[in-house]
Image (cartoon, rainbow, N blue to C red; front, top):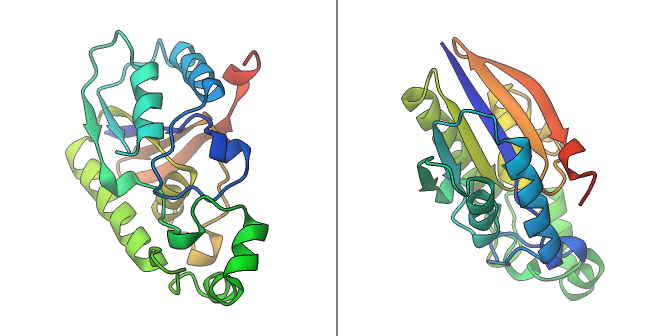
Length: 203
């Protein structure tokens, strides 16, 4: 049996455009992000999707709503797919974050289990993504799932599936509104595509 995961990073927000830490701040899609989601809808129109799992943050939920408009696909809000929380850094660009919180940023970059105030420990982030991955593998073998979430949570899911070391957790960059596919064939993981953006050429 094969499980297919069609993995979509949400469309662009103004904070993405401005290179601000976004984390779990509930920032809405920009007009460009909605346009990107419509392009994704066209790209995925011929894909048979059994279930969609969607981060409960609005930028992911709205991306999924646009992609699946007019389709009878169950959509499940999934907080385990949220982006990592960056605490007090959210809303700031890196230079401003470092100027305000130099010691905290240095400690965090040295050890992601020492997050900025209000932030999420890396081990907690990894644990919730692991929990989600195991749940869908046990429930949905033989199906095609759409996952609409965030660059951090989706890339961490792939890292865990491939059993790569923690130091490689940032190895799977995803552009806004990009598409990737991860398959589990009899439990064995395989990346079919990653960071596909051809559907965005006219946006």
